Length: 225
Image 1 (cartoon, rainbow, N blue to C red):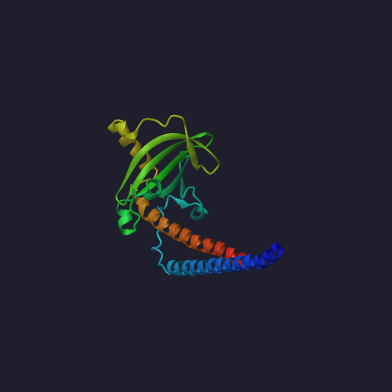
Image 2 (cartoon, rainbow, N blue to C red; image 1 turned 90 degrees about the horizontal axis):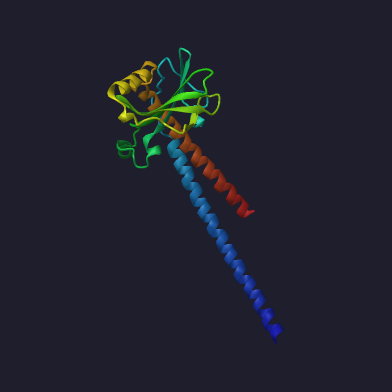
């Protein structure tokens, strides 16, 4: 009697399991296909976007090779025996929601610069964190930092970062502004760095759509094999 019941129930259990598995696979495949279509549509839409007009940096500066694909310095120049390296970020990348007008119109109107001034044989570099606008440049902080490699890109601040910039007297603040302006760090960099960030953002977005699509497609192939 029990054997008969078991032999009847066992095929029913397997049948239900097979149907559920088949339904789950079909749903997963449909979701993957829908996501892939969406990624492709957005990729093609972004690919049609017109790049900003090409802008060259001020003549004293050169663009570092591979800067678009990395997170290090963008521009470099020599000033006497000094090497000046400039890295740039959007304000919104540092302070979420802090883009101000950038958030309203999709523009890039406020930038943060990391300006590193290094000298041969010195283990420390002078580091300026600056806000850059179309018509102005302001210094947020000045500190000494240690080099982490031969590129001059600095990362880890020293234990003491110096006094707050706004607490320095006006003459010293003016002198520090003159110091970096003498080295070509001023609002004249804005147009190039703004256009450069547009290109970098566009490239990163294209790469994101492509890599996510490749991952989903490989996952879909594995599920259907």
